[in-house]
Length: 110
Image (cartoon, rainbow, N blue to C red; front, side, top):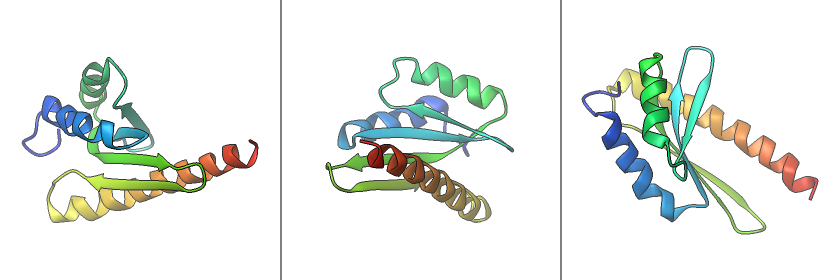
């Protein structure tokens, strides 16, 4: 679990960010993989609960905006202790970079 916050609180953060961006996902970190829980998924709380029960750590949010020309990806690490914060900041940055690379491939094939 993410500090003292319950999954419904994390989903509330996701829901708050959702309308402000084209795409928003809550990133759940595992040792060798990730799960993204998207703001527009009607089963988002269930998916988050399942990921946490399977050992995942809710790291933060990834928000994506696209104006037809430029792709902007933002990350927001959930509050945690200083040692974990830098780890999860780097983790979200790597995820954002991978998303940007894949989105650029799609954009170039349009």
